[in-house]
Length: 390
Image (cartoon, rainbow, N blue to C red; front, side):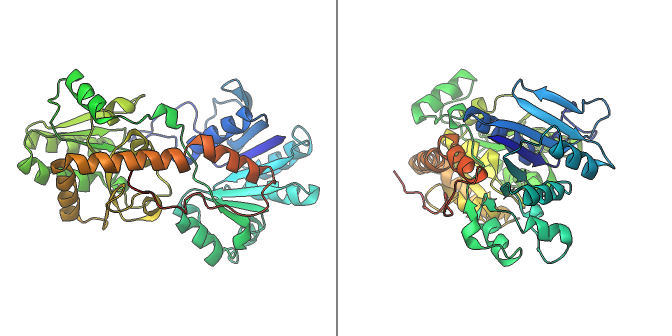
């Protein structure tokens, strides 16, 4: 089938903005990965997104397989209509990730031509009430809906008044082969290889270094943990706001240089391999990719009790959820896992098994394809099963 995937932004050309923040969002990465998965399964995929930079081409073959079309500002509505009636008139299905304004014109054309439309939402910021505007009413008229979390599904029903039979809960997924489970023995070997004692407690933060990701809370928690575990290490992996990275360096100096700040890295698995506990104190999330990756690698997690975290972190099974901003609870739970090797290892193994079973491309991509290509006859909930301790 010929599938057009519509997404608001598709960052190309600049990896970071002036503040140091990465330019590509999680939703954009999902769009790219889903396009490649659909192509792997035999479909032709065009991505349509905004043209953000003057130096980027209006149309090109991206990564050697994706037809990438960048729509010009001011005339996007006209350009998308023209393209869908000419160069892309043979489109068989539409897949929208997020709610880009220009996508409503694709929905209109799909209705006129009788082609299916699937809308996938990956975060709370994308939720909508279909009675508020004409645009929202169109977003509320798609054939199928994909929610990556139960929270998003509930909002589809309550706020957007979508028929529950049209909504499937399908995580965006990850390639679990890239984030293999690290056994306890392998973890000790990896620690020794980088100069750590095999018994050194290691905490990992792997996300954008931004306030809404909870980095300041993580630093405050580390100050208290360091006083109890003076030999422990805290790895902060990821690019982010320069002022916050400077604050992390200041706290590290205050804590005997126990914080290792890597910046943006191409391969996070080497940090998963030497870590014992993953801290994820984000203030709001859809279904966080970095959390899926750390779970796949076999890390027990202490996370904020929000959104998509509730679909992945189960107390005493894959980790602990604690109230947002509750530093004391973060310290308490991380300390429990530092002190109890068998507990964190059993949680990590359970987390890895759960992601492999419910969130890997091996299982997710087929369900996504069935939905987008209009072959789904009843909704599916891929996150309905609670994980079990091995």
